Image (cartoon, rainbow, N blue to C red; front, side):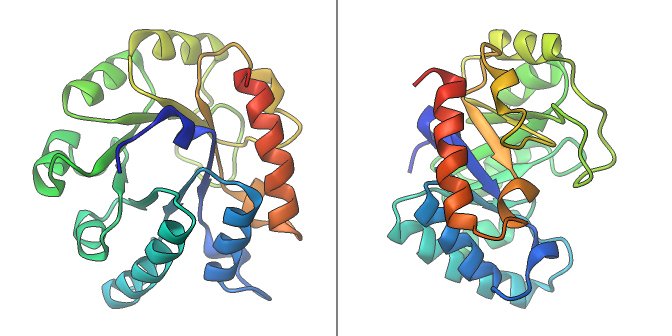
Length: 213
């Protein structure tokens, strides 16, 4: 599956902090029913065996809905489970090395925070970029908030799809209009919701308005 700008519209990034009455699998399926356009599995604490089992299950689920499945950080897991892609940050494996290991067919996403990082990521084979944090966020505390002016500058400097991430919710999506991003990546706004499917339907509509669809 090749990366398409439409896949960036409503990009769900998992976080098991809100696993409780529902399993993560059930939460992801609710998000898929609600219209998310891409799912990234982010696991920092599972051992490799459990991570792979979960990745295979959610990969199959995403493919049933025709939605790209991305693994965060772990190239070996991404390849082993048949994921559509891998996403890495600036502190992870270098993008060109990820591309070498993952092959040309796998979608490669890279988190960037400057124009220089964005251009380098694209030169190293990135298919899309994650920009942020665009708003204050508690999900990742090691990144500074990205000014809207820098967001626009990065979007104008590259020709690959771009997704904004960090502290985005239904109340602030609209303020990203005109920035050049192709969509929004959400964590808590999706997975902390009481009714994930209903929330995603609303977020999908708001994201479409934001990008001008």
